[in-house]
Length: 344
Image 1 (cartoon, rainbow, N blue to C red):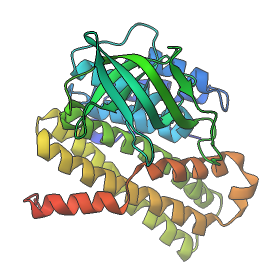
Image 2 (tube, one colour; image 1 turned 30 degrees about the vertical axis):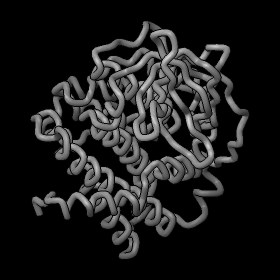
Image 3 (spheres, helix red, strand yellow; image 1 turned 180 degrees about the horizontal axis):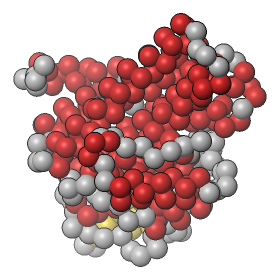
């Protein structure tokens, strides 16, 4: 399963649709669990950066990957995000390199950046480093003092980098392993100044790109429900389920398309971009959770126990959605409303 995802069909050109077909086919041709092949696919992709005038096509590409295989999409998205971050800083990734973005924080661990002999070195542990054992490089956030974090580029084959073996008991995204990584005097190159990573416009835009992947994954689950209607005449309950799916996904699709227009029109900088990202991610998150719940009700246990593809998609999407900060992001959005964000 999987198909090209077009966010604004009336404006979609045939060339872009054909490119999305090819991208989906390339991702679909990868064997299950071949993360290295997915990373290789990412390194060879030539896709626009957000804000370059073709943001909608970028997010359509991410959604298409998500609809085809969420594990492939989960491997590709961080590489594209890292490349866009480097470009935003006026830098380029070395040819053939593969990248992750390690920016999570966790209790009991802290990664520090220290100036040494005109350069920087990293000391400490970074949690939640996805595919650290498969990538050549990463962009890593580290504390430069008690209050500020900087962003640094590191080579993951440095002998001072140590990857923890686990734990990873996930039933979704089983091959996209995230583990702690320890740095012991690892040479690091600063990317932007302290605070730049979170303050730049692209931080919000990258978060919407993740939501585009969620959207594609939700479409694939919803398509399994719709396939039942093609096999037999649906009763009223089945029609209710289809209507619920359509309303949720249509709202999410419109939110992504509108966000892309705003980014490319220059209306998503600074605070406006923060609000746009919070709203768009919440709309897609709500739609995806609605899809998971509705698919469970519509299909029952059968596909979850007898169809590996469907069961895998459901587990992958459920775990991927946990990147959203749930109620905390709604609190952040409410704070923006109090501070004057409106447009209702």
